[in-house]
Length: 157
Figure 1 (cartoon, rainbow, N blue to C red):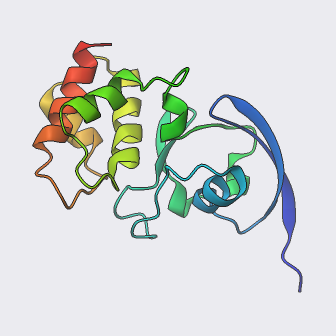
Figure 2 (figure 1 turned 90 degrees about the vertical axis):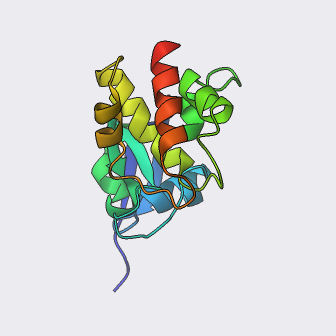
């Protein structure tokens, strides 16, 4: 039996798209293979690490456990879409300046989760930051630099 396909209409990083995708394709694979946005990472492939976090209508969502066809008429933002005019966002800049990224593998998911937090709460305290990032794992840091980066971004918005 041939896999079923659907026409997916959505917005990715501010651009309307219409693509024919297999009904079983994950959002992660759609973003990386169809759209060509490789910032979103495949980590655990089971929703445990948060490396694949993207924003769906401003809310963090795990792309490894979301079907692309579920995103019909939705607005998706990846780490690439947060930069404007070739310039890093305040959050991306602070991750760079505060050394919030070590190997960098978790960084796109961390930035997406932190961006969602800052959109709903522009002045979070440390506990709120840690809570918002609790679904994102980093094997390189003790999270101190990541939290510092989010705090600095909140102050510089």
